Image (cartoon, rainbow, N blue to C red; front, side, top):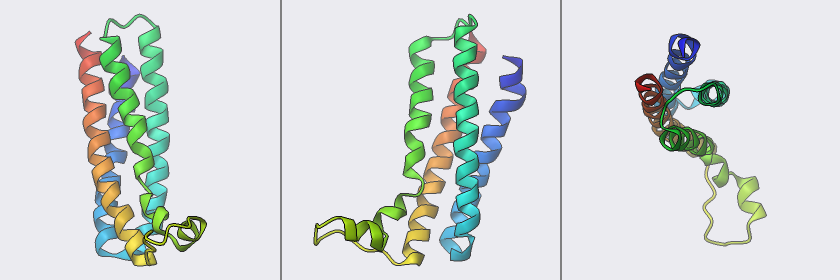
Length: 139
């Protein structure tokens, strides 16, 4: 539990905060979208490390509630694909779908959608990481 609470959990919180800040900046300043893409990759990586650490902690005999811990961990993983959702409105994606009502977004709209999604996912990832830490720490 020491490595998780001293290193992995704070790293997830820092990366989540970075994603939230960069998501807000991207909504206001479109050129920050490239930097946001790097932060999104960092959050994916941090979540992967967190998932591995939580599974190792649970397998090593931690008395935490298994169902709650795995549930929060799965929720953390499930929300990640929401980042980058703006790509669904890209002209290439719209051309692949024959639906005439499918929206086609401009690059600035895609960046703003990605920024908004990053803010929401970053906050949710931080809350879920906090809940996992509380559950693991209480055991």
